[in-house]
Length: 402
Ligand SMILES: Cc1cc2nc3c(=O)[nH]c(=O)nc-3n(C[C@H](O)[C@H](O)[C@H](O)COP(=O)(O)OP(=O)(O)OC[C@H]3O[C@@H](n4cnc5c(N)ncnc54)[C@H](O)[C@@H]3O)c2cc1C
Image 1 (cartoon, rainbow, N blue to C red):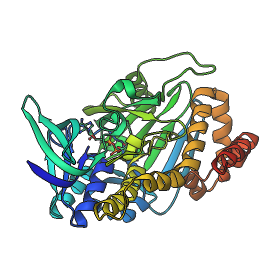
Image 2: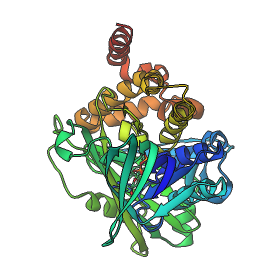
Image 3: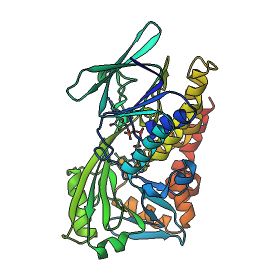
Image 4: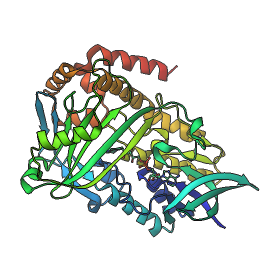
């Protein structure tokens, strides 16, 4: 039976980055993923600001394309914010995880693809982890630290689905389509977001450029009742609408259809650790619910976790409580505010609210819009949300320091 310092379940961005960091520090690491390869669950649109590449030392080979413009479209208006410089990238999600997993191996770690985590138990002071290949026998490994990086399923930290508390849920579906040159050029350097009842009630839809002539067309909504809008068509209907009504083409080929669920713990009340088990990434709600962006946040949280795992392995730490504390310090304020704004916007706004808010945004400089959308600097949006935002910020600050 093989023994490891850390077994990390789930080779998403968070699990991969945690394994990469630990393996680089010479710890004996096993990264486990249920899918046979990274193309199989290539679900994320993977848009990110430019800073992500430098922050996590990622090469340009994992970039689908760069973007330097944002467009927001409502039922009746469309507004652009652009820059002469690159503002961000749309990553190739499969290549991102493939690159990180290769790094784990290059630093001496093991990566087992096609192995599903089944359960763990404790015997003679060791944590035994039970893994299984499709249709195969159970395989046992032992570890000092077990990491839950299974995303929204939280498969390790909640052994039974019945134990899970209620989450704020969202569902997203995306088509990867191949289009003609002129259609690709129209949107090739731009992230386009669509808001309002026509495009995507209770959420938003999007059109992102990928590699040459490939576009990501997606739609996502949060689960819950909208105050005013009742219609609820399947997500695919809204994706088709973007292709026919916005791209205005019938000449396209669907290359892939993928999607996933997000489950976010309101108030960040996830379980962060239990004895020698530690949860990271979407398993502790690092995805920001306002824009559904979670790759770099999951990777950053994974680096925080890796720091404490190393201390634990070197007997400098006996509990992961300081990990939870640092995560809460970093995420709580902005994430709680984002969650509340997303409920207000996606489950409260009608079409005229969207038109009015997007018109107000027009006055913002591109860098300010990026600060709001990607760095959650909501103070730059006071004009947009006025008294509501001030009240919320005050309320959250009072609770944070109580
Ligand atoms: C449609 C959609 C679009 C998105 N677009 C963006 C975007 O543009 N930009 C952005 O930054 N974020 C985006 N996100 C969010 C982002 O993809 C996630 O926040 C991020 O992937 C979370 O990383 P993670 O490693 O925590 O979890 P995940 O990426 O979910 O990885 C978890 C891994 O664990 C594996 N796993 C689960 N259970 C087991 C098991 N029992 N055994 C073995 N393996 C298991 C899964 O197969 C998976 O590979 C999007 C999400 C969705 C759904």
